[in-house]
Length: 468
Image (cartoon, rainbow, N blue to C red):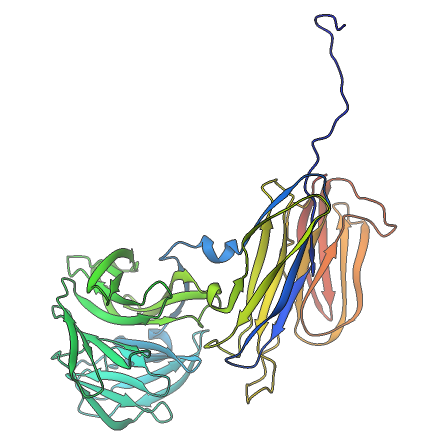
């Protein structure tokens, strides 16, 4: 019998899933170029008292909307050329054609930049080409550029033409792209159709183009392929846009995003390129914008993680004390062997703070098959994952060389809570787990903590929160 107005206390607990991953920090795979390995497994264990409905994925890759600018460099400053025209990402570098500020007059130039905007080469184009090469494309061995109505094959060793010429159906071939699977070129000019031609110059397909196209880029996406067009509205204060064109149907798909100009009143579209190597893990369009300063801007188009990393399953349910595993397939065919590709695989359980994550890394070993050694990473300390943490968090850092390092946690008052790592540490990426205990193994209460990395003369500090 309980009287009205009496408070009745009951001891009970709903229970939670408590996820644990093995390996707990990172999965690193070394593969020689153009090879595939499916032997890595991620084991999931539920240490909680409730079923864990797990969803796996890499949100960082899917979070960006199409058209986000993710990279850019200035062209006009290093080259003093205010008539940069075409662009292609090839052989680990960015190739740009330029008319040296003098339309219809020699000399014209071919420039090579690295991804940091450093001008590494300046090569003269053959004389007598008027504006010189407009848009550029790459077939895996040679560059191609269109001067007036001819598409010329270009040797990047010296910037000279090889003698191979393809007759273009356009009087001026401003837009140029190459489809390696069919060995066909796509060419257009503003106010003209889009043409597909072979190496003999024969037209195999053509489509009326209602837009003013200056640059073309081929995207061999699994849901495509697509032909991207860099278009100019020509309407007072130009609107520059990247538009997706379906070469199978011969129509624009409707996917479009603006390429913002610094000075819209004087902006003009230039060449266009597509790359999955410029920004690792992303498919990006590289647009040449003729603006207040001629420049390159890369726009995010799609995640490319599915090409180098695949999960055998993206959803599963674990009962209490249950375990299961997911196969990770790594494939580096077509990737830049000098880069390391990373993706945080997150496992969500549907309960806040009860998920986990592991870092997947794919890179090529140095000295394999003539691959140049990978440049050592710099000195860095990444944000903890998760943050805030409820029980455990992962701390990832990198060292540029083998050296003595210390990774330690302090409370907000500056008192040492626990030293997580101390001693000689190899160059590269490392991930260390903190289980929420102090140096005596006691659970630490909720609060804000400082995580500090010291190595050599360097020091990095980040904040993290623990919520019990």
